[in-house]
Structures are given as C-alpha cells and as structure tokens.
Image (cartoon, rainbow, N blue to C red):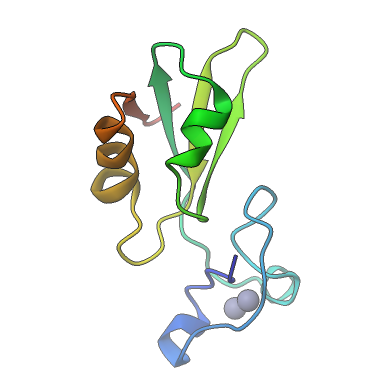
Length: 104
Ligand SMILES: [Zn+2]
Ligand SMILES: [Zn+2]
C-alpha cells in the first residue's frame, strides 16, 4: 500500500510504498523520521477464520492471530478507511464482532 507519511501529507503526500505489516511508512520516510499515524488494534470475538476476516479488510488493515487462536485486526487509518468508521462496521455486516483494544 502507499506510504502513510503525515509529515509530507501537508505537502501533497508521499509516493513511496510501505509494507503495512512492518511499517505505515516507506523506507525513505522511516529514515527521515517522518510522523506516522498510530497503530490501531481490534480484537475479533467469536471464531471466524483468518481468511474470512481478511476478506473484509481494506489494504491499510491486516489480520494477526495469536498462538492461543485469538484474532486481532491491526492497521493504520487512511482517510475514510478508519477502524471505527469502516473496518468494525464492515466486519459487523458479515456478523463478525470486533472491539477496539486501547491502552494495551
Ligand atoms: Zn514515504
Ligand atoms: Zn515522509
């Protein structure tokens, strides 16, 4: 997905590519120390498969499964593609319950 740099966003954005599972920033922005949006995490309740959950996510969010089987959705808000405004309601439309984890 594209780099989510918040420093160059004020100057028209960054064209770099970022690997969302590693960083919301491209390598250049990482080195420059640009400002990045905060990581947001939601826990999935019930037992849907990882693949099912993944199908509901935009490219700025991804699935992480813990060893105990608990599934989390993690990522960084990008314009309207936000955790509470898009990801959680979208999962809900597929009857998958998710709740944001904060301060953990
Ligand atoms: Zn960048
Ligand atoms: Zn940058």
